Image (cartoon, rainbow, N blue to C red; front, side, top):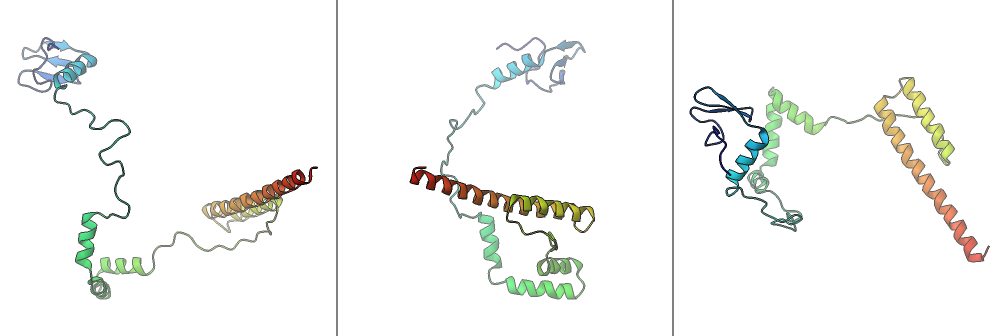
Amino acid sequence: MPRPKGFPKTGGRQKGAVVTHGADILTAGGAKQRYYRNEVESYVAAKTAGKQRGKPFEPGQSGNPSGRPEGSRHATTLAVEKLLEGEAEEIGRKAVELAKSGDTVALRLCLERIAPVRKGRPITLSLPSMSTSADVTTALAAIMAQMAEGEITPDEAAVAASVIETKRKALETEELDRRVAVLEQQLATGK
């Protein structure tokens, strides 16, 4: 493809010509030549076509179809483990010593390992026995009431509601199993 008149030889910055916003070219004389993006892109694509690598693999194929072997570990991880092998107890003791001597970073590290931050707290809910779907609705209403009164947080209510939803699904599955058993029995007896 021939280079457009006034288009820089390198397709980018060059002495005497500057491409701005990929469309305007200022020549050394200051004249502005306008090229539309598709002209510039098609010129660049045609010029670099022989240099482009292309797709190394066909769609759906890769150089390693089976992937990384299961259980394999990164070489850096293995090297670090080998360095620390047999030293973990001594390093732990040193961290505790530093924490006792007032090193705040070591102290924080030790505390994070001894008593990690809890993601939740135990809550006590007064819920009815759940043996029917109506009981599930009552239990959800009780959770909503306790949340409204401030006894539990909205996040805690959401977690509790998801547990109750699991119970509802279990009740539903039991009911469907019972119905299927009745239908199978009726088919077997010819009714």
